[in-house]
Length: 104
Image 1 (cartoon, one colour):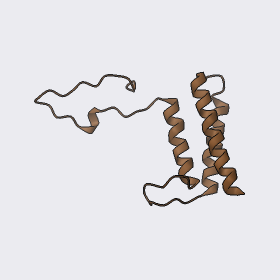
Image 2: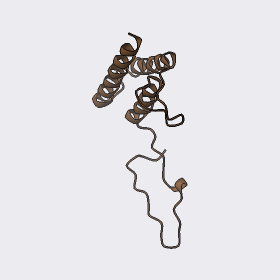
Image 3: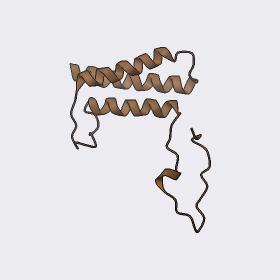
Image 4: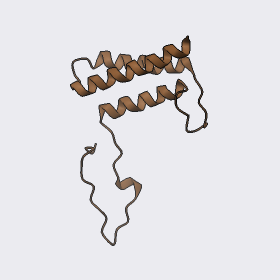
């Protein structure tokens, strides 16, 4: 895994840079939580699904993603930095608020 702050060497005049030369972001807990949160927001119909170009709620799927994030919070308790823990808590609060407003 390449650190997200690692410098990427620029190609020389004789080299061509390809997408494979640029490391994908990974190993970042906050980014991982954001990815799951975005998926939940799509299933809540809050953001448009980029494939269908529609906002459609799928509450069972949204509940599943929220449950996964809650399990993640439980399983990582005591092992996160304060900022990671706060981010996860804020994301869960926002998702639960959206979920409850749709269920009512």
